[in-house]
Amino acid sequence: MKPISFISAVLAISVVGGCMSNEPHTVPEYGERAASPRIVGDGLEVRIYPLRADRDEVRRALVGLDARLTSSNALILRGLEYYELELDRLDALVDVVSGDGPGNVRWIGQSFTWQNLIPDRVPVESKAAWLALPGRTWSTMMEDGPVVYIEAMPLIGYERSVGSETRVELVREQDLRMESILGPDRCLVLVGGDGLPVVEEAAEEVSGGEDLELTLGGALLADTGTGEVSSRDFMVFIPHFTPARLQPLRSRDPRRPEGPPES
Image 1 (cartoon, helix red, strand yellow):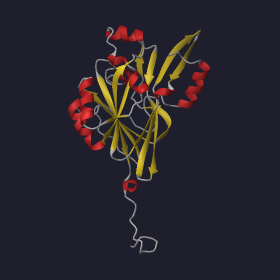
Image 2 (cartoon, rainbow, N blue to C red; image 1 turned 180 degrees about the vertical axis):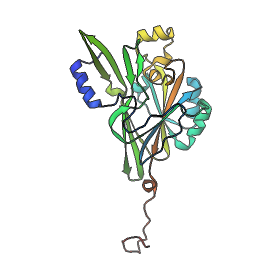
Image 3 (spheres, rainbow, N blue to C red; image 1 turned 60 degrees about the horizontal axis):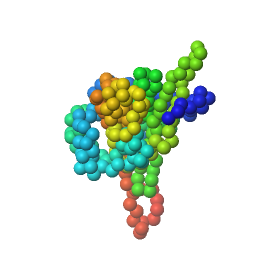
Image 4 (cartoon, rainbow, N blue to C red; image 1 turned 135 degrees about the vertical axis):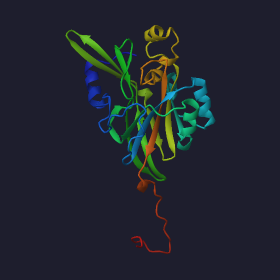
């Protein structure tokens, strides 16, 4: 993977907008072990849970709960495993693989501009580079009800010294783009998987050749509290809708003329 040119990076920054800020512009700061923030309107909630189980146990739990792997082959190869799960089975998953409450909870709402979905950038390669997970999301109505649309694509940033200037170069891989459409009864779970390390040299230096935690997905999901690759998290994307959006269409009696509802 090669860094893009500085001119291209400037263009990428203008497209990505404020996605690299530590907190989205619509979300206040929440501390450790925060309760779910106040939900306002339709949109997306993002939770990050500590992972207490190994990779095989996580996969067995997901399969046992009828979760569906939605990642493309390219995403799986880079350790980004997205699973669609029935929302009412999320608590069972948390009990099996975490046994703890979320360490970070944020209300993203609807964001039409790209923003970082993880709480902060993740440094790699001795902090000469960093990772982020820019995403955007919005709600819309389908024939069978409301949905929340999610789009995310990992980003690698490099800080390069050129003379007296420090330049930021960004690399985004189009084949790692994820799209998901979630109805009221579904959620999306992201766990780190096996695959290619983010940086070969960093994998050898940090983990002694054991690079399972340093796939792109594994590095993004390194513990958000300590930043250590020995401790992992998993992310959950939960859609929310107002009662008015969830209310079924008013049944009509074909014998009654159309008109305003009776008082």
